[in-house]
Amino acid sequence: MNTQLISYLDEYLQMQTPQFAVMITGKWGCGKTYFIKNIKDQWCSSNKSVSENSIDLKPIYVSLNGLSSINSVIRKVKTVLYPILYSKGATVAKTVILSALRIASKSFLDLDKDGAGEDMNNLLDAEGIIEVFKSDSDTLEGNRVMILDDVERCKIPLDELFGFINSIVEHSNSKVILICDEEKLDQVANKEGLATEYKNFKEKLVGQTFALKVNYADIAGQFIDKLSNSIINNNRDLIIDLFIASKRENLRLIRHCLIDIKRFFEQLPENIKENPNYDQFVKNIVAYVVIASIETRFGNNGIDYYQSYTISDEAKKVSLELEQRYNPILERYHIYGSSYTIPFKFLIEYIRNGFLTSPEYLISECRMLKSRNLTNWEKLWNSYHLSNAEFSELLSKEKKRFYNKELQYVFEVVHLSGILLSLEKRQLAKLDRKHIVKVAKKTIEHINNTFNNDFSQIYLDSKGYEFQEINSTEMLEIIEYAREKYLAKIKVAERDYVANVWYGLNNEITQKQIVEKFEAVTPTRRCSYNMEGIFHQVKPEVIVDKILSFSNESRLEFMWFLIGRYYLDGCRIRGDIRSEMKEDKSSLINISAMLKSRAKRKRLIEKKTIMMISAKIDEAINKM
Image: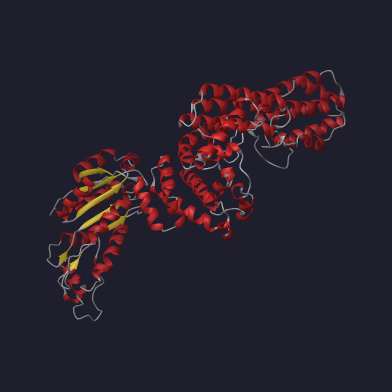
């Protein structure tokens, strides 16, 4: 992809005194260093014979990342030069260097090899380096090339760095190649107030700028080859396709990703390989480790929502973006949902912490590694593994169940909808896509109306499989409908439970008893009612009447309940109010106002305890 760049660099090396630099630019992690080091290795691999009376000067590569002074750059250059200057032609090297530095005194030469000569490291300073590259001695062979990488990450003031680079280009016979992300370099120049100086510097110094083109699939393949890992190599195409689909154009991510895959399987028990489903398990795990690694290391916190099927608007938006990015690849390779192997949250935790928590337990709970008979829709989900006779028989049975509304679980409805839509798209069945949507909605509504108390039947669980045709208009409509019905059912159930708690509180209640009433887990099993809003489900006057019915002692208990719930003054724990609790704010405002109004009719301790509760409610409102 970079033939013009490579050709130009070859020509640049043949120039005698170009007196200009070449810049190669590209985004961080796009492979600039990888590219230039490969080119450098090719330049150094010349089979040209060099005699003992001459020095073969190789291209010098220096990363400027984090360097804060010109002297630190020189030290790096000397480190690269050291083995060259102390090669088998060391005596010649000294002669060349000392001649270049115009040092006439023979006391500095160690021609008799008695060890009393001057150390080259002490002789080479900034001017000395330039003189070495400037020398036209016949004994100094090879290309005098200096490659300066990570220019934008250098901590040397740009005007000082530019001056040093300019002195090398103008006053020596060397060629200078600058490697950087020029967008970042522009930002550094602007930050240092040197935007104009940078522009002038580039016009004067840089003769040609190339934007590196990257074949990410090819380079990722090279990384895979170098690892020589059978699991990674066997899933080569899957890994590369997911990396390309991620659109995270950073080769460091794929490097880390491959290491994450390798380390993951090293942490698993050895006997897992004996499981008949091991190969399928490996393919699925590789896919999800790639996604978890790339997105987590890229800094995408939204990866926490991937395949969670959570119902918050924010989570749905982020999850949908990730599904649209990766699901076509997962479907193409017949990858099951992560819950069928190892729940995705454990893979994210592995990437963030560097180790897999309780691998033996996770493997023991892995559904893919447990023997069981597949249902008909599961077999149809992987239809390419069926014979024609098996496919026709299963399709006939599942179509009958679907169109006769015999399904009792929402996840079955959604899965079969996706499978039928996929079969229609692949021309394996003649079906009406609009009719599929219509039947799916009616069946979902029937399940919601029939099974009032069993939320497992209306919960949209993927059961370890990706929903097919997930990005089609029809499937998005079906899934959204299922989620809306589920959310509405959950809201009714939560409202009824909370209302029953309030109505059921007796007049002599304690703080502990109130807390216990709301410790019940919500139908979503995401948390307890104590962590949600518990005031807005009933009318404010209901709660006010209940508070007024309490004894003075119970009102104090209720006040302590408020203090503990919202971490108010008097609570031993400091904390923020959960966002879910803030849904109660408007209800609490009304409750407080009603309590103040009703307290006017009360006397003594009774009035005081009512006002104390109102004050704590106001404190919670202000904290919100």
